[in-house]
Image (spheres, rainbow over the protein chains, first blue to last red):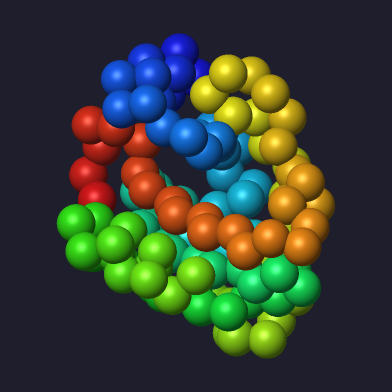
Length: 72
Length: 43
């Protein structure tokens, strides 16, 4: 969590950076395909009614943030 | 995997400041969740 705090502060994140240490959130959202590896870069958009709007198994770390902001 | 229209699984976690964050905190708002591996690990 200390590393995440440093990271979030360095880039002035205006959103919460969650620490899924026991990987329950990742598991619920299909991001832990191989438990021996780290989380897969799953991207999820949840709509205002709490339903899945988009679920992507692997998103491009450079392109997706801009793409997803356009869809909101 | 999850499909469009599925109910988003509720979750509770701690953020980088130690604050508890729940999906239900964002009721009525769009939420973007993005998973990534721990720093300095493969993937």
